[in-house]
Image: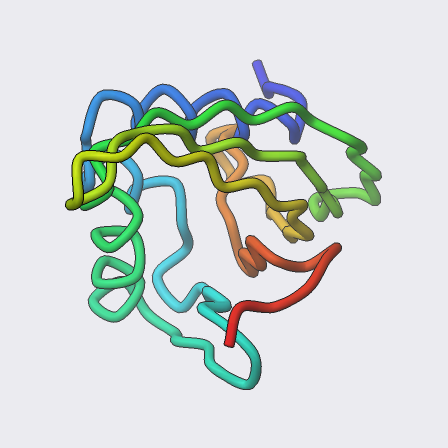
Amino acid sequence: MSQPPESAHRLFEERFNAGDLDGMLALYEDGATFVRGANDYVQGKAALGEGLQAFLGTRGKIRLETRYAVQHGDLALLSNQWTLTGTGDDGQPFTSTGRTVEVVRRQPDGRWLYVIDHPWGAGELPA
């Protein structure tokens, strides 16, 4: 049975908080695009892994709250409000937030995989 498209958010949060890079990468199609910043995006799992590893390197915890999920057939447009909290290299606590825009595609087995992940999609891009 197929999950709703926003299940991708729950799975991403679980795997991020477990520090499971391989599990996170399994949530993306092979040629997925990941936006790292203004005019800075990568495609493919190898490059995507580097981008996700940078997030995991914060050793923080992430919370995703789905803002919307608009489905059309096997495609869906998603957005979430994310909050990342942790302790920086300097020992000081930090909190980062953002609003995403993502495209996911339903796979033949019913899973939803990210095609485009834009963590800053609904807000300012980092420099």
